[in-house]
Amino acid sequence: MKNDAQQQQNIQDRLAFIELDDDACASIRSIKAILDRELPVALDLFYKTIQKTPETRKFFNSQKHMDSAKGSQVDHWKSISAGNFDQRYVANVRKVGQTHARIGLEPRWYIGGYAIVVEHLINSIVTEMWPKNSMLGRPKIGPGQVSASLSALIKAMMLDMDLSISMYVEAAEEARRKLEREAAQEAERVRAEEAKREALRQSEEEAANRERTAVLTAMGAAIARVANKDLTSRINEDLPPAYRELQTEFNAAIEQVETAMQQVVAGTGGMVSGTQEISSAADDLSRRTEQQAASLEETAASLEEITTTVKKTAQESAHARDTVSSAKSAAETSRDVVRQAVDAMAEIENSSKEIAKIIGVIDEIAFQTNLLALNAGVEAARAGDAGRGFAVVASEVRALAQRSAEAAKQIKTLISRSSEQVEHGVHFVSDSGRTLEQIISHVMSINEMILSIAHAAEEQATGLAQVNVAIAELDQTTQQNAAMVEETTAACHTLGQQTDELQRIVNSFALTQHGTSALRHTADHMSRKIAPKPLRASKPAQPKLKAASGGEKADWEEF
Image (cartoon, rainbow, N blue to C red; front, top):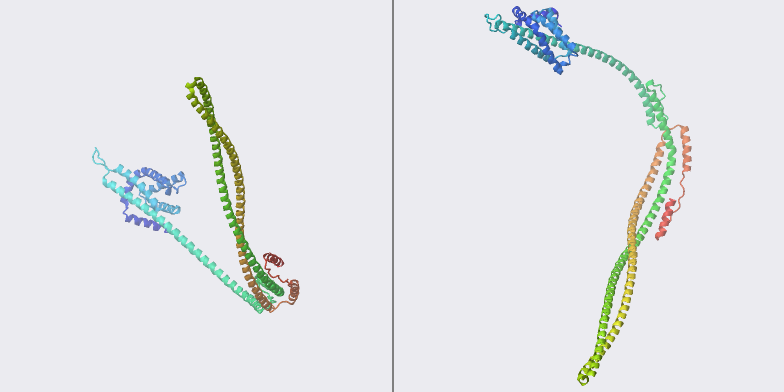
C-alpha cells in the first residue's frame, strides 16, 4: 500500500487535474453554512432509501449502527465544506474505502447514495443562493458565484467518490494479492510435503520391492512344485511380517487342496462302483420303461374300444330318448282326444235328456187328444144320426192319438236305452282317459330315466375321452422317458470312463503317505458298502389290459 507522502502527492495531482484550486476551495467555504445545515437532512433521505432497499439494509444491524455511520459521514464532510483536503481528509477517505471493501459494499450503492445527497445539497444551494429581484437594488450574489460554488462542490464530491472507490479497489487488489501470496505459500508447502512423501514412498517402495522379491521367490518355488503335482509343497522360509499371513493362508490352502485331493482319491473307487450300479439300474429301467410303453399301448387300445362302445350307447340312449319323447307326445294327444270324446258323450247325454222331455210332452198331448176323442164320441152318440159323421172323425182321432202314444212310448224306450248306453260309453271313455294319464305318467318316468342314462353315457364318453387323452400323454411321456433312459445309460457309461480317467489323474499327484493310506482304507470300506445289489428280471408285458396294469405296478414298486 502506498505511503502517506505518496498519497498526499496523489491528492494534489488530482486536485490540480480537476482544477480544484484555492479559489474553488474558497467557493466551497462560501457555502459551508448551507452544507453543514443541509447535510444531515440529505443523509436522512439517504438512510431512508437504504432502509427500503434489501441489498443495502443488510449492512446495518441496528439503528444505532446507522446513526454512528451517519455521524462519521458528517465529520468527514466538515473537511469537504471547509475546503481542507489535507492528511486528515485522506485518512478519512482511506477509512471509508477500506470499510466498503471489508463489508462488501459495491461501488454502485456508494455512487447511488452520493446521488441522493448531492441532489438535496444542490437543490438547497440553488434555492438559497439563486439571485432574486431586490427592491434595494442589485442582488448581493450573482449567477457566476452560484455556478462557481456548485462547480467546486461537484468537483469535491467527484474527488471524494474517486478517492473512496480507488481505496476500495486498492483494498480489493491488496486482498487479492494477499490471497495469491497465501495460495503460493500453501502451494509451496504442499509441494514440499509432496516431495517429502514422494521420497518416503520411494524408500518404502524399494523396501517393499526387496520384500516382494523374497516373497515371490519363495512362493514361485512352492507354486512350481505344486504345478509339478507335488501337493506336499509348503512355504517354510522366514518371510517378512507383512507376508506371514499370506504364507499361512497359502500353506493352509495347499493343505486343503491336498486334503480334497486325498478325498477325491478315496472317492474315485466309490464312484466307479456307483457308476456301475447306476449303469445296471439304468439298463433295468430302460427294459421296464419299454414294458411300460407296451402296456400303455394296450391300455390305450382298450380304452379306445370302451370309448367307442360308450359313444354308441350314448347315441342309442339319445335315439331312445327321442322315441320316448314321441310316444309321450302321442299319449298326450290321445289324452286330449279322450277328453274331447268325454265332452261329446256328455253333450249327447244332455241331448237325450232333452229329447226325453219332448217325448213326454208328445205323450201328454196324445193322452189329452184321446180324452178329447172320447168326449167327442160321447157327444156324437148323444146327437144320434146327426153326430154319426163326427163320431167317425172322433174315432179316427182317437186311433191316431193311440198310435201317437204308442210311438212315443217306443221312442221313450229307445231314448232310455240310448241314455244308458251313453252313460256306459262315458264311463268307458273316462276309464280310457285315466288309463292314458297313467300311461303318460309312466312314459314321463321312462323319459326321465332315459335322459339320465343318456346324460350319464355322455359324461362317461367325455370322461373316457379325457382318460384317453391322458393315456396318450402318458404314452408320449413314457416314450420320452425311454429316450431319456437311453441317454442316461449312455451318460452312465461315459461317466464310468471319465471316472477311470479321473482316478488315473489323481493317482499322479504326490500326497502324504499317512493321509493317502487312511483315505484308501476308507475308499475300500465305501466300495464294499455300496456294492450293487442283484436286480430281479422284469416280467414281460401281458396281452390283456388288467394283467398289463398289474405287472406295471409291480415293476415300478420293485424299481
